[in-house]
Image (cartoon, rainbow over all chains, first blue to last red; front, side, top):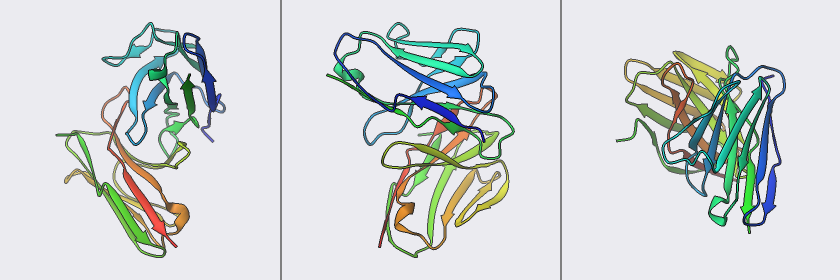
Length: 116
Length: 109
């Protein structure tokens, strides 16, 4: 149980275009989801905390207008990378805490974004 | 100083060896997580601990709240255990995780 489905798993886009990444909680309601970014050989960096029905909370240094987060329902959060540039190329992963689940957090499978 | 410190940073061992990865933290926590990240990037939550010890197959996790220290053990290690193992603590009620830097484990056949 406690599965988060993330897609796409890989996306290649042209500079200047926007890319949407979706995370769905399949068997639980996720009032809060976390969005992370990971550069090669580095630890995950929290970008923002997504709260259902309200504005996301962004970490210091993360551009709100660049990384649009929408959490319109208890089972879906989306991250849109707007006007993507090559430096936005990275691995993006979402996470949720189902609460009461013995293993703690559950993670999406991640999205590898390449901007060309 | 980081709030969550892991050691070792890298570990290479032979198949069958007993593996220990350590995690120390300097803040008050509500729970500690051990996570596994495979080369493809996917992350799996192995354990969530708030006290004592948990076991799942060949994996054992322990935590000492007084000493602010946790260990992850792998018995009878296998090449498929090769991955990055990450310790992360849940610090406060907003469920955010504070991450260790990870331990890259390589098990050679």
